[in-house]
Length: 415
Image 1 (tube, rainbow, N blue to C red):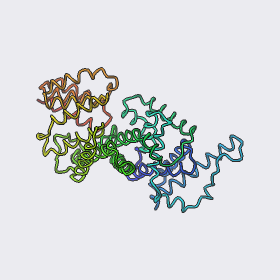
Image 2: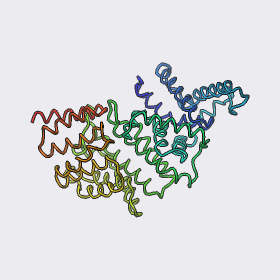
Image 3: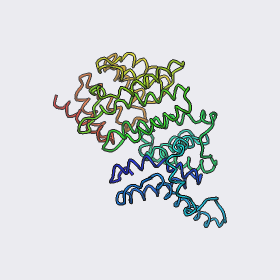
Image 4: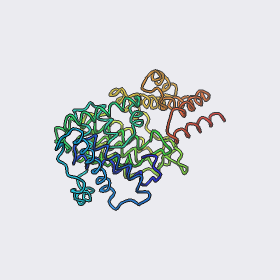
């Protein structure tokens, strides 16, 4: 859908896709067949709506079309297996249109779908990959880049997850409190990745994909309502709000990337910052801090600084030091090295980045080269910095990031 000619329709379809899938799942309870049916409906919408106009109730339209496709699938299966009844399912003609028209006002099927995809019957990796595909609409390539693994690996995980859901007969409903606790970590991880893809798209001409980041925040608020006393849930919501608060200042008039230390902070969303700070402060007061709370605390330190020069880097370094002990995420190690450089000088940061060059998870990822180039530039090693900026530009699939890195390289050549 990202290649659709009409951006408005593309955005609408991406928003409605998980809701339609949830509604169709509620009827058929066959994940694979339901997803195929919804995909066919989305293709039909992308083909018809630009010419005929967007229906008055587009979600109802998608559900009706997908329902017909699913019924056709059921009939085909019945014929193939020579059974009289495979699924007790009405034909499209028997389904009252009012059911579909009211679908837009029923409980949030997207949240139900989110928790269903994160069922403990699935491995954590498969559950997260499936949810990113079904709920967020990310492509297999985008998910692979988020996990730093080959695209084929993600494809296999998604396929296995669909098979497991079908075999286990997982019901389509919100889980009870005990079940929620089992699935919560996967749900939070998924929403974290969805938000990150929306805030900094891994590919394409736009730096942001607001449809994804906005949906991640919306779903995170719903999860927070379900478990209001969980500090990590509050921490992740705070992290999203504190990060997203800078969105308007991250790009210039020509949609060029503006780094954090050069942003016009008057354009930051102070309401989101205040809400995020309050959430993370309350979460941290409950005791043992988790990874999302620490990341939110780091974001709060950045957001509360009146200028880049006034940023409390020693506090950020202390927070990253704690976070680094909690996780082996290589990107946390990169950020820790940058914070070290801001406190102890660029050479100290470069020394910490050195062993990460052998980390297979970062091979082909542009962020390590970008970090090294930045610190080499600060250390006055301009030729080496220019080379790494160009290397990073070749590795990223994001047009704004590539343009920024090439401009940095060109600027160093002129010095």
